[in-house]
Length: 86
Image (cartoon, rainbow, N blue to C red):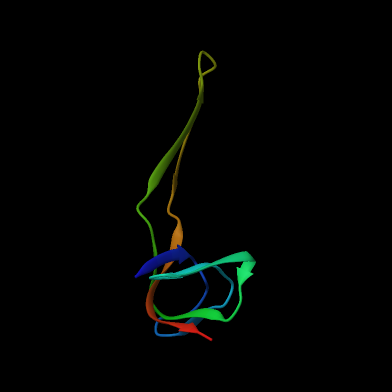
């Protein structure tokens, strides 16, 4: 399972990552320049959600300026099914 920025896909959709930077399986290590060719990762969207709320607080000392704001970052949870190496 991995969490990534919101992809805008529905639950159950298939996701394919074909721009891979590094691949490592035992002694087989491939480092891209900038990308590794012939490798792709396939997965399935498990759910879309929002992370825990963080509070953003800004203030200026001695100026009576205070602002409080909350933020919840959207994410997509993906289950990796397989890594395809050509």
